[in-house]
Length: 405
Image (cartoon, rainbow, N blue to C red; front, top):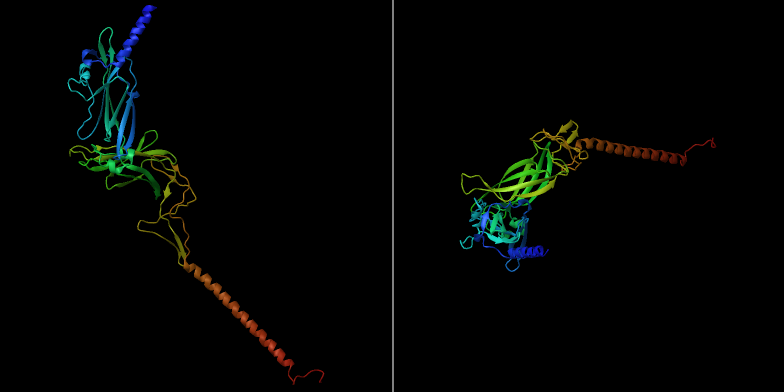
């Protein structure tokens, strides 16, 4: 029992000592026996804060990863680099453990990596959008030999937040150096319209705030994606001006009413080399739902006059009228109909009555009224004449009565 307690105490002290001290890696024999780091468990967290004194913004990263199984504790060699005009991101690919350990060698002046004893790393980052985390770890074994088992390198590329999306400060972000360009902003779904059975989805966004001054923004590549990450439509939009609009005609795809989709917009800048394709910037996305489709079909108005009905046409031909109280459907050649909810169109159905139809009826009413008035006057005149003659006959001295006879 005493031997067991002593051994346990000795090992505990040794482990505390080993965790507190960073060993001299050059004094240890190395091998490549350590298992790879669990990349799926790496967690990236960031904070953005503003310096109130000079109104600048700072981006800080805190990165953590699962602790590997190490007998006497782990030693981590970590490098976090950010892409800019002078820095290219390159993965670590070591041929043996000795080459891996040499990336951290203060005596040789290698300072691109740091050695830590905890599974957490913190560093301030610029708003340059692309970064690379490189980690190798070593399991130190003091007993029976001073050796270290080194893992393969874990190389993880990731994107840092867009400057304007994080700060909403266009003045600050526009002067931040960037290798390519930032993300478009204010991406939104505007409307869905139906014109002559042609359905169009309308989107708009604003150009990125951060663009490398040595390159030119050339185009945007767009995708409409379902919740299951299925790409159902793509587009290519020229970069012209700050406000960009994209009208997508649903010719070969079906969009379900009430279903949520996402629009993904990726800006592309011209490559410094004329022979190279455009280079992508940081993407932006926005979720949207087509709840109804607004009918913008020009209506046909019917006019009736003495010569009969007339139809209104324009240079593109006759236009049909859609009843605003009935639902309509969207169809294409490859999918079922999509029933949408009843909607009120901008151009509602109107009934137009010709003045030529109103005029004859009005004239007839006027003639009837005039005839009635004239007949009333004539009747009144006849009545007055008859009454006058009766009064004159009864008062005359030459009248003869039966009594005088």
